[in-house]
Image 1 (cartoon, rainbow, N blue to C red):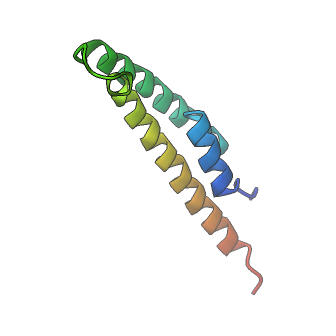
Image 2 (cartoon, rainbow, N blue to C red):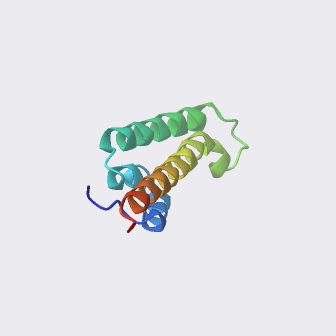
Length: 91
């Protein structure tokens, strides 16, 4: 079994580039789904938000999905790293 990536590396990459944390966790389809939904929900809230809403408010839907992608990537990396570490402990 190959050693999984460091969870903190996955966290940093996921914060910088949405969906890439899932790719590092060997879940590329999951990462693509997160990116697609971030774009779709961001575009939806951009089009439906009131004119006086700030730019961050207008893309809040996409930012929410991005945040969920970051949490998902980090959680998965931590679990995989813990399982790998436990299975490779010396008796």
